[in-house]
Length: 153
Image (cartoon, rainbow, N blue to C red; front, side, top):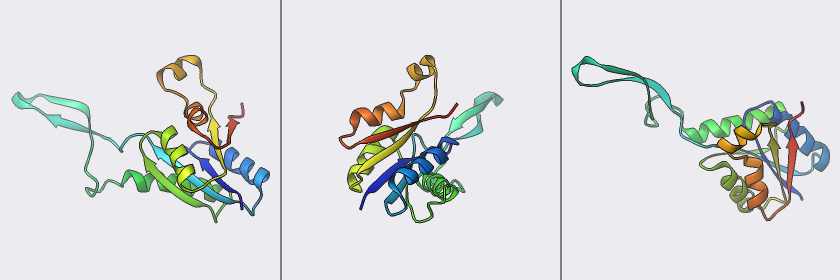
């Protein structure tokens, strides 16, 4: 049976990727939806300093368990929501925290997937210069086939 890993990021492109995979590989394939958060959840806070000054909008990373959802569970919720929206209720879901390109490929290998499906957002050259493309990273690092779904315009 074919195992398909589908990378989702919480955008509208998720539905296109999931629908395309289902059309190409059918209902009998096994699907694994993964969302990778590239950094722990942060919140904005006011940080008091000596002499009565306050630095607004300083980012602090709260500890898990202080009413803040675990980033791994939050990422898994994104994957589960995307799979449910696409009607793939039987899809396994996985949430990870770290480098998206690396963890997508590592998860595909770990779960013995036959194909990776990843979306590609239509970004300009400046945006790609500042933040590398996850789909390009996956294509470069993967030894298994990668299906890249381009964002519809």
